[in-house]
Length: 560
Image (cartoon, rainbow, N blue to C red; front, side, top):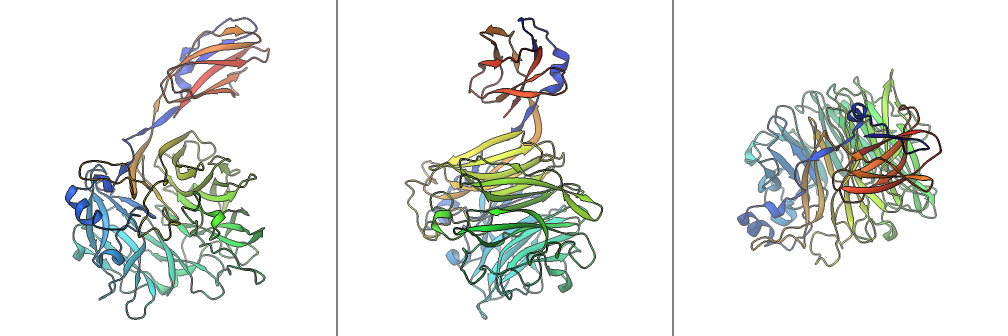
């Protein structure tokens, strides 16, 4: 609400205006839910407790059925065939993520193969069909390939339909799946490309029935970019190719390529490309170097195989880059997230918006800093709700604990209106076992945030938090799911009459607990300037505002 104060403690109460300026926070539908901790006891005892494997949450993906949002699917590295020698597993919920079951319902796409399902991502289409792309090893040729399939029944392995054969790359990595309209995009890195790593996307324009060879193309300049320059070795960094598709069928990708930087810190070159129809990608040769694509941002970035760059005091080597991309339904707003090193040496995340301008895509303003300059941040994912709200999911590490954040922007990514900490955990004291790859890949390279209607759905990897007589997940890295609505609710604050304290004014702010309130001042009710922030977790909050000597209006805005 507003209060007006001048050189004297005269007050004008503007209640009508106050109702129009309350900011608000999203509605959080429950806490993050430990998937394994909410399995049936029989599933837990049979499939979890009997295993020495402890890293069940690595590189999780979430898919929600738009025709029945109560049906939620989560994938992870948790039960690949190298453990079970059985059909691969998905975590499955039919009550919106409250309770979970394990479904061994993804059959091997290669006849007779017993090794399959490494990297994998999934998505539902508008008709409720589940699409999936995964890596599998040809047991005859001993090569990895990518396979794509669909199912209408997650409970039945025989319901899956696979494409006629694998995509042609014999050494693929990090497949990514995106759907929109009748377009299906399978993005992947081809590690066998001549001269380096090539970023490729296979497209289907008939909802996955066929993937024409002519639409399986490099999205950077063909041939890729070597992982070293001038003969000097460079930390291995996967391009982190990610894809998004709008409902018109336009496809957008982000990727990052490394060249030798400063004192062993890699120089990252982040690029954006688009497919808007026809036979070619729009910006494959837009840049003057061998990387191609539209320039998003370049700079040093602390990632790669060096021990000193590993996220979380060596817990998680960032080998799959720090990238994310999303687009709104009609393709008028494209959002990218990428990671660069801050001036004090920490890894920071940035959000940038691009917009169509004729045949071009142009940046809509400067990059927006998402994370704290004091802590390393990584594992971003971005999504856009139907009401235009932009959500970014990411982790920060404060030296001891991981903190999982969800930030929301309601003004097309120009400012952050909300920064919620969803979960925090430490890996100290864990008894780490099989599946952790020498304890340096506990979380992997990505986690997942998607939007359906006005809701955001996400999955993260974190330390389990369920302890009961029959289930104990506190020594496991588990997938956690959450739902956050982008429909905002009001937090109306009330400011007391200002009292003079020396040359300043003192207010009493009454609001809701755990809501951050920002005090703003204005001399004309048009331009507002932040003058103080009060985030004390109490409903009554004293605050002192310095006066400039001119007559001013004051208001309090609340967000969570």
